[in-house]
Amino acid sequence: HCVCVVGFDLELGQAVEVTYPQNSKLTDKEKTNICYLSFPDSNAGCLGDTQFCFRFRQSSGRKLSMHCHLDQLDRDLPIYLKKDSAYYYGYVYFRQVRDKTLKRGYFQKSLVLISKLPYVHLFHTVLKQIAPEYFKKSEPFLEAVCSDVDRWPPPIPGKILQLPIMDIIMKVRIPTCHDKPGTTQIVQFTQQTDSQIAVALPTVHEVDLFRCFCPVFFHIQMLWELVLLGEPLVVMAPSPSESSETVLALVSCISPLKYCSDFRPYFTIHDSEFKEYTTRTQAPPSVILGVTNPFFAKTLQHWPHIIRIGDIKLPGEVPKQVKVKKLKNLKTLDSKPGVYTSYKPYLNKDEEIIKQLQKGVQQKRPAEAQSVILRRYFLELTQSFIIPLERYVASLMPLQKSISPWKSPPQLRQFSQEDFMKTLEKAGPQLTSRLKGDWIGLYRHFLKSPNFDGWFRIRQKEMMQKLEALQLEALCNEDLLFWSQKHTEVETVDLVLKLKNKLLQADREHLPVKPDTLEKLQMHIDSIILALPDDLQDILLKTGTT
Image: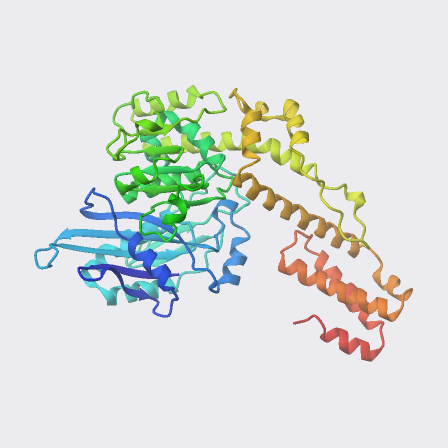
């Protein structure tokens, strides 16, 4: 969307100094959010360079930019990477260094990329390339960078994209919804020219999962349950980079399911939703917040689940076994790292994954390999949980023989919690997971959560579109010209208009029809029109083409 430079002024506080491109639209409320979220607010005194990300609500009532173009690309993305039209991401490169020439004694500035796309690794890599240079060379350099970015191809999923940025070409591949979950297609290096270095990015969106979960190593399975169920979670961390990475790791641990509630990788007391999210007059909302300000230890102590992390370092030795801590023990931000909750997990603990990762630490297995193991573990756990639901929901589809070309598509059968529970005895998660425990209780809780609601709505929409597509195909197999000759002109005109509408709908909603169906339908329309009187032909040929 745009690039902002946020500086610190003794009189004004944080302020947006420059925005590129200059015609990019941000409301005053959005600018205020960006200002406060672009600077660390913790006591850690982030000297040097810090990278982190935040997420904030788009102001209501404003038009969505690039809407149609991104919508088409959105279609082929995995569900968890689809853009959320109500939110922006901010990717920050913050520099704080001593400078005696300044009144405050410090130079403090942030370079911030604002985007609808959740490609954290890609944008952090871009900032790592451009921010240090920008702090030396200032605005003209930023203009040059923006003209580089203007030449980037559209972010088409599945294609190897070459993205030039200041004498470097980044090669990336955005995943598609057709990729097998858990696989990453490697982007190959090609011969580089003398002037430009090619850098292949292994991922556009993934964070270092093992590093993020290290401080709460023994509780990964419980945290997976809490995220799956959309429970209110707060991550208290020493710096925005640790809070934002941990929140993104939590949200991604239920992939390929989409986390459907709000999440804020870095949240401050100045955030426009601060009052809404910290009020004690109602239960904490279904959100994941990443915070660094000590003030939150007091403000959010009524929250049911709190993750407290110290500095994230890769462990040289195996973490010690840590018990879940009682919430009443969490008084200040100086409390020991750990998970503070009274939640009792539904599933028995999986000791195997703990042993496997501990062995990796002892054998000095690379962090990337540890992350791959952890990601595969979460994926298998999520798939074991979701497959029985997928199987049951597929059974709600009407039989194909009940689809008539001349009637509206039949309705889906209603989702019945009790009917679904009955299927678990023979076709439950025990078919794919060795974990024992109260799976039924976990499903009952999940069916009340925003994640189930979001998942089921998407499935419903897909199945309705499939029914529409099957009805279109049935219609194409009829002899529509013969039908029109047996009916009045009024009925025939009505049929043509309905068919034209169906064509527009199929195109607009990207209905999953066979490739030749739409061509067949257009041929039917043309042949019916040609059989009508000339005056009607003229009218019908003009109607519905715009």
